Length: 263
Ligand SMILES: [Zn+2]
Image 1 (spheres, protein in one colour):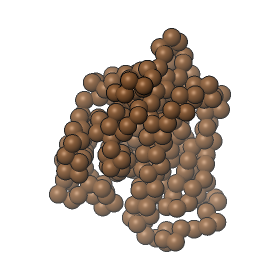
Image 2: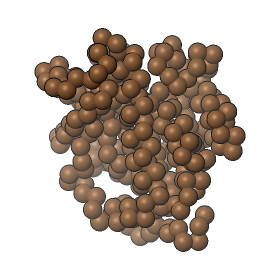
Image 3: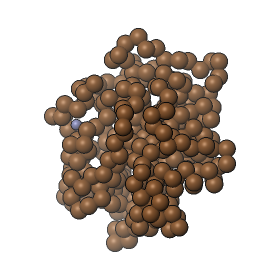
Image 4: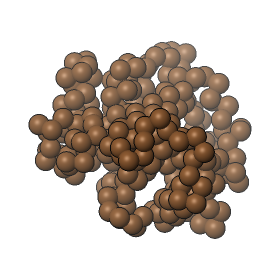
């Protein structure tokens, strides 16, 4: 840790606790839910120099996972967390990933962030698979939530963990996204025809994971983000980014859920 890295204040339970690192190898990232989008984000973060990656998802690598990457077919059936640790170590020998969320550092240590990933694994939005943690992380841990629905991804803005969208909010957003794409198909369709859904799924995965990696590293490495506690507005927490191949648009989180008030 750099002696110049600030330790965020813990004065107020309601205060956003930003902190930053001076180098990627000081960045701590907890990733819960290791579908292909989250796994790709982990690999990109490792490419960018992040070594302290804590990944958790005991579910198996599925045929769908291996069809669109980054998990290789040889690892199908293995626990996702085992498979991803193996991929990370093979790619970057100095990266020593853990699968121990209970050991993840507090948000007051520069610099810790979290990616929470879920996916729709059946035909209806309620077929949502979310990896639950045995114990909640620090309530103020800066957290990004992403959900994958076939070739579509939805990414929530970076918020403290306790402001994360609840399951019902995620299901509602998936329903909204399906309606938007059905009623108002993108005017600028992707060069890849929609009939080629595995290719579109792959493009969405890579583009979404890249955006997440940028946002997590930006939060961790940009000292100006320490001002976020003064600019982050609980009343207007931002928009959900919808990606479908190269198409990108936004959804507005529903205001009628009280999950944002959960402590
Ligand atoms: Zn909610």
